[in-house]
Length: 77
Image 1 (cartoon, rainbow, N blue to C red):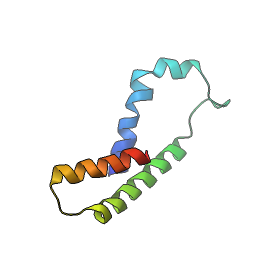
Image 2 (cartoon, rainbow, N blue to C red):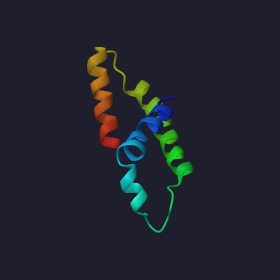
Image 3 (spheres, rainbow, N blue to C red):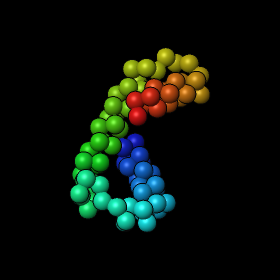
Image 4 (cartoon, rainbow, N blue to C red):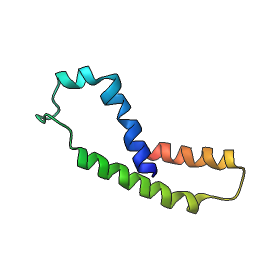
């Protein structure tokens, strides 16, 4: 579920906010991005996050645990 949400939210930047820019350039000679590769990458990140959270959870305050987990994921990204 996390990979689906991340994939959908990441579409806001290129599709909604700067779509005019992307229409004017090509990257590496490619007209369209490889959506299957992007989707696979988000699926892998979602799996890694789901695996890491239970391993790092220490039973502290929910806010503290969330901040710690968020910092680790932020560094990985």
